[in-house]
Amino acid sequence: MTVINPFPGGGRFFKGNLHTHSTLSDAVRGPEEVCALYREAGYDFLALTDHFLARYGFPVADTRAFRTNSFTTLLGAEVHAPKTELGEIWHILAAGLPLDFAPTPPEESGAQLAARCSAAGAYVAIAHPAWYGLTVADAESIATADAVEVYNHTSQMRTDRSDGWGLLDALLARGLRLNACATDDAHFKCNDYFGGWVMVQAEALAPEAILAALKAGRYYSSQGPEIHALEVRGGEISIACSPAASVMILGRASGSDVVFGDGLASARFDLAALRGSPYVRAVVTDAAGKRAWSNPIWLDA
Image (cartoon, rainbow, N blue to C red; front, side, top):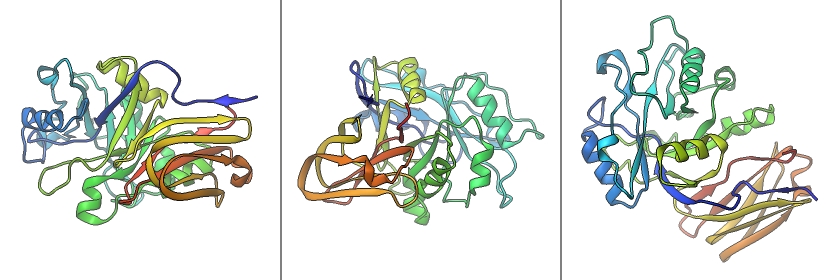
């Protein structure tokens, strides 16, 4: 019997935000203050990802001094290069860059820049695709991406364009094996923080362990609900979670199923509801409408 468990035994879950800005680029709080804000809010880790542009001096924020025994940081940046189908500069999230990551030359494309970030060891995510009208063709060109931002809190607060699942589902239907992530993209010019995060299962609260788990897909994304366990066994998927109003599974095209209830703590589904989809993903929604999303699980794993 085939058994797929994206959260194998070992390690615990650590809460982190992968997309944040400071006064090193276009936000209004300094790096030390930003790290303190997330640490005091109960986050276990943070990636400070300022805009990697010439006008800001191509910053990769050195946040190592703000690490403690109970809080760590990933070094990174939001990198940019020309240009998308709509003529916009690319926005690519890279967590896990070296401090000496070289500035972007004028001739470097978005795909080339993403590949360079990946080669440097970074976790690479296609940032806020709905916010600036990213197309499927755009996203397909970033062959080295690890994930798509499926929820971006500042995009929700400022433009009502927070949801990247439409793009990611289209990519998954084409066979691209990408994960998802939820982030804040906080600039602190409005209430754009503490709205979306990842829960990463890692062996230790250390940058290397967190980064390895992210790249392996050992995490889920959330606005509040918790996914405690997720397992595909034979032709079924079982989900354990914090109290929920609904639990659903989704696959390619219209394949889906849902269970509703008051304080659901678990659900089990027959994968036949997905009509032969090669992947399944789970969504847990609580009574306040907040959601948690699993990464896609490929059923041929």
